[in-house]
Length: 545
Image (cartoon, rainbow, N blue to C red; front, side, top):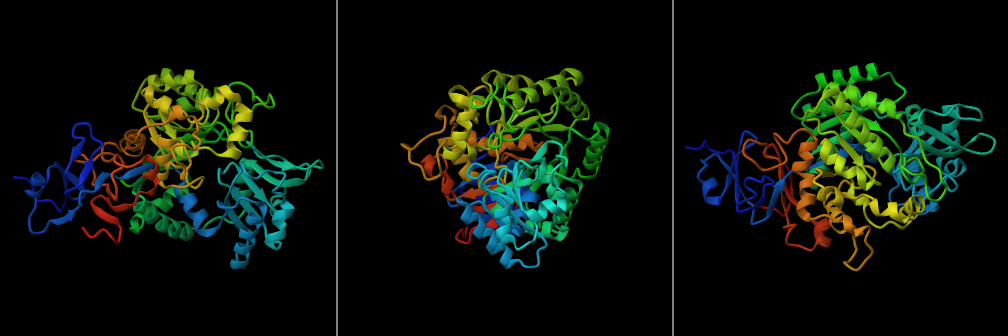
């Protein structure tokens, strides 16, 4: 005799992502966990008068989606409280948005914005004087969508003490005029040096923003995230949001490690954070390393010099430091989460993980490299051999005339064939996740999955341009990248990632079957229902099941 279920969902087209039972019709939930998966008739026998029922009307059901590289708390606040610059394609459009935001927010001591394109704009076009013209004497700081480039005005530089002869920050710099005065553009950690001077968000502002975006993520089927860069205060805010009942996604987190700070001090800080935050809904489990920057501003590290200039960037950690730091965190059983854009950074990270493995022995670490924009094909098999996971933001794997011109000039024709090579990784047997890096770009998983499958722009047709079509992947592989593989990367595949008995009832119901439609329609998918631990956190008004 089965225990009565709290909830049953029947007449669904369930894709469980569990290889032992790939398809089913119905599911039963008790105390927030799945207690049975099977046919309609089998699940109907598990009810009593108190059981809630949902008739799924034949709709596709999947495990809740998980974004394993997202800046959830920071981007929530940035987008909720600042000027949004993502849609600007000209300097005049940028200035209009900033002018309007400044006028509507006369009491803000700083004018802040986020999202301008570092492919469309450059240090030559975004000067401090242009920003001065729309900020009324108040200090201003704008972040590019990639968060590796920034733009500040004269008042901000004055407050920061940036002038001829002033020092550059570690792993960053201010673009300067011939006399040494700042031009307006900031690179890498110069952004964060300026950001620390500007007023930060209050805890209430973070909590307000996270409450809003938790629901926004639920509406797009997301039930779990891996925040790719947290502080102690971020973890405190996550816990507070959860305790208030406002955090309707599961949070794993990774905290940034710095090359210029002592190893022992940083290791102890992460150990303390892991000890404090190890709950079921909010926890920290990994150490974040930036090994290079981005192609657009020339801070990505390549194995061979740039084709256009013959130059190259330097690693943000020396290889000796990488080996030492990776081995130390691996020894303490932290996952490593590594930002790698260029093939030189990828090689350095893989070498560092191999060194840690030799020093400490093998364990279920699930170390992962994120972004992987340019990869030398000789390194792909090493991911599989060393158990390294590949975390891809496949929305970027589509034609973009401005960004593609920069990349192709830097890389030349041969290396340009190995841009975001997720298909080659999957064929090699490497576990791959798909994610967003929001707020660099949209968090919408269906747009991201569509691009992974087509390698084309969102509104493209089959005959339109394709970015390296040999690296396309299938719908099943894209879904695994957002479900079971994502849960594996976030160290929670024991309780999420598939619709399996014993796991949480984190699930979504869609308005279409992704396997039965054109891949060019995936991005239009709507989520009709989202459950987190068996509780509704989103229901489309038109879904009256």
